[in-house]
Length: 325
Image 1 (tube, one colour):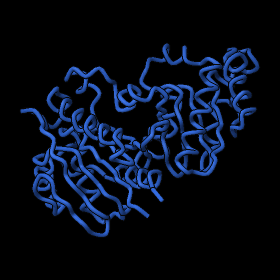
Image 2 (cartoon, rainbow, N blue to C red; image 1 turned 120 degrees about the vertical axis):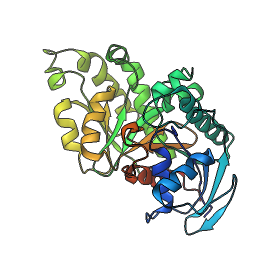
Image 3 (spheres, rainbow, N blue to C red; image 1 turned 90 degrees about the vertical axis):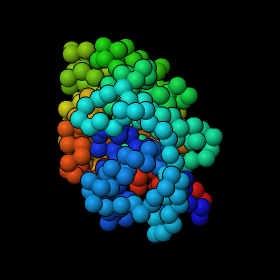
Image 4 (cartoon, rainbow, N blue to C red; image 1 turned 180 degrees about the vertical axis):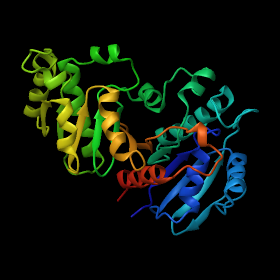
């Protein structure tokens, strides 16, 4: 079996990205064997090595390390002067983190990577740097309009119909035709990843899933018809169910995905259950993209307090989904 080719981006150099990457590779975690390429700036890794008193044992700007984890190469990408200041968002760090991600995606789009694992970025820093994308998924949607934001953990898996938009804008997306296509795309993307067929359970929008129209008609007019149409086309799907119970009923069922109709509806229960171990995964792409489910944590950057578990799980999931025969 060929080793998967996995790109890893350093994230915002003023956040905890360099720390959790260093801890993931230099620690005692069992990472999958793969060809790893780290897109970043070497001086930020050196700074973190000194702060933590540990090392990747990889020095120089483009060096291979062969061992139990496969190989690791550092792809040097220039960062502007002033990047890497810890503690807050700034344009220079935003530009650096965007360049890391942009370069990794370019490699993946050319077929040179099977997966991209992204350390946390600051959306505010991207904006300060003049980048119009609100995050990783929005940038990927530039090339792949059907990109889906999902969250993966052992206790719970959640896919979001909408993500980084206002609640008002999210409500406008609750239309039966668009929902049906979303359900079909989600099912196809997981099947292409070689995963066993999942069962999808759809959350309602309104309290009590509308209570038969007494508390809102979206379930009757839009969500329910979309579910039935997808079911007739072969998708294992049911709902809509009351949003206050659908997540509870899905916990612990490894072959079930909850489909949440807007960002916070899905992220609040997911992060309550799996904040340290959950993984953000982009589906509907010709390659795999994963990331930790937490942010840059500027408040603890450089203090040796960040735990790498979510990063480790993101790497493991990327390798699993990208495994090549």
